[in-house]
Structure formats: structure tokens, C-alpha cells
Image 1: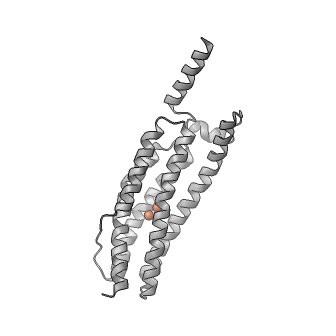
Image 2: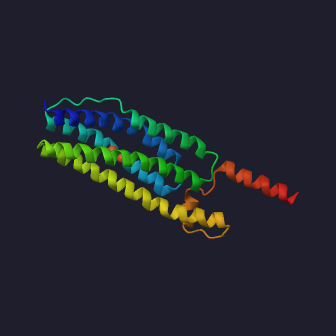
Image 3: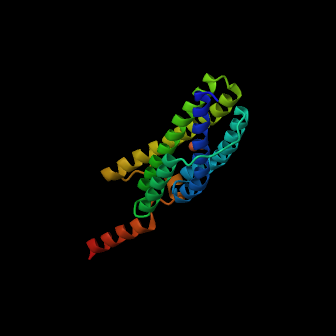
Length: 199
Ligand SMILES: [Fe+2]
Ligand SMILES: [Fe+2]
């Protein structure tokens, strides 16, 4: 096997493990998300991610190799960071918790975008165009997922900026109310603060 093809196979083995880890992490991220659009984005990307696992298996076939997965420590670390953010989010207001969750999710997508860019380039270089086409389709879905997360985070950032200024403006009232703007713990904190003020 050529050195380039060997590197391609190794990189794809890491990706197979990374995608498999994500099929277990994304349902937890969807569960932790407050904003309905964010929840929906994670649920939709879970279905895509299950497809990414299958597509990688097809890409291995196009290589003429058996699909093998190698532990991906980078994805393990990114997912662990996501879990910490989910735990910390329980103490935060819903919008701030969602924004932290989006930050973790975008780091994951960027890792995938970098990895698929590399393997697609390697596949093209060794003339494995069927394999490259499969990897390219997944790369496109990772880029779309990242783009969607940015689109969801923009109004949240604006709303948090307004909240920080003390402005009584709700940019996306319907959606945010559906997703419960404030976590129970933060509402309780605010109530007790108000009660203390009144006493
Ligand atoms: Fe993926
Ligand atoms: Fe992804």
C-alpha cells in the first residue's frame, strides 16, 4: 500500500470512531438544548451522523479495505468538554447555556470539517474518486451543520447583549418562550433575590 493510501486509511479509521462517538453524544446535546431550533438542529444532525458512519463504511469499500475504527482521542476530548458544558449549563440561564453548547458543538464540527477536508484531498491525490465523492458529501453536511449553528447563535448573542444591558426587549419571544427562557434554578435565584430586595 502506498504511504498516501495508508495515511488515508488511518485517518478514515479515526473518523469512523469519531462519528460513532458522536452518535452517542448528540442525543445528550439535543436533550440539554433549550431553544427548540437548537434541539431540532442536534436531532437532525444525529440522523446525518448515523449516515456519516454508513458512508465511511462505503468509502472503505471504495478503497478496497475492510472498515476498521481506531480510537479518536481528539473527539473523546471534545465530547468530554461538551459534557462538562452540559453539567455547567444546569446552573446558567437558558440562553447562556445554549450558547456554550453551540460553542462545543462548533468545535466538533470544525474538527470534522478539517478531517474530511484532509481525507478527501488524500483520496483525490491517489485517484480514488468514488471514495473522494463520498467523503465530499459528508464534508458538505458538516459545513451546513456548522453554518446552521452560527445562524442559531447570532440572535442568541444579540438577545444576551440586550439582557446584559438591562433592555426589556425579547427578539424571538415565541420561540424562546417555547424553549423556556430561564432555567428553574436561575428563576429561583432571581426570585429569592427579588424577595430579599422586597424584605
Ligand atoms: Fe459527521
Ligand atoms: Fe458533524
